[in-house]
Length: 184
Image (cartoon, rainbow, N blue to C red; front, side):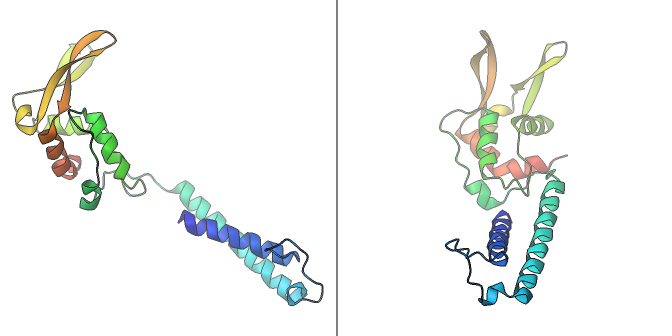
């Protein structure tokens, strides 16, 4: 759509030059007795220019008023083109790799937090309280069967157990991400 809009804008600019008696190719003046300098032709050029202006304005309003997608929509072809980093990865790395192939006009982006919520919902991950108002995602007895493990990492100098996905976990997520994101 943006390509069409650019073509319309370019066409409008060419027509404006013609209507003002300017050769759009080299910028020289069109000779006085040329067909393009006749008032009947110039009126029609301005009619087309005005029409293009109104169409371009409509398209701008449509783009501006367009609602953002509110659900994740992925095709099998898109999933097949996801390139995941080698080795153990966190859920946000997985989400970033998937978001690269998502069509943002059709689908909202995936977040690691949303995937984790879905995995907790079906019992593959759990959470633990780390303070009064903070919880952390952790592995449980089911996690290892799905290729999800825990490694020690550090944040602000403090050790914690980071949830990571091995090759089995990455494959599980890729095969099931459409299903997971459709869960309510």
